[in-house]
Image (cartoon, rainbow, N blue to C red; front, side, top):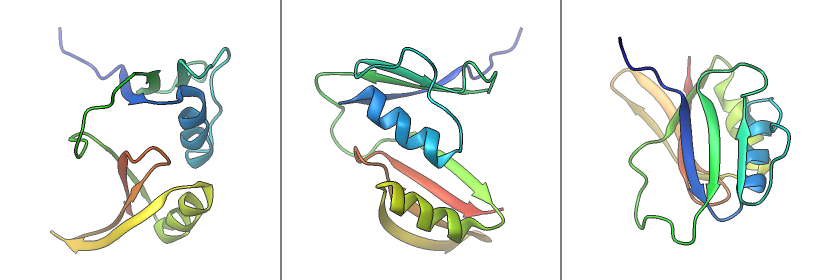
Length: 116
């Protein structure tokens, strides 16, 4: 039996608010009964993996070592949309035959949007 990815989990200050950011970014909905303490995106839609957000008193300091890599042919439009939703643009990269932008969500978690 092999392992599968069930959830990508974010420790955060406000689970509901951060779930809303990612739901809007991915054009999905926050699952029912979300709160500031716990929220998911994609579970009721049957998405895999589900994004899970859990309020914690202290986030791990420093750079997060796991992050989302999102891709689309019109990736620059999605970068602009993410910034409009509250993301901070960290930088643009063109390395290893790939192009992408690194952003930080409203709580500072890094994610990338790249060219498909």
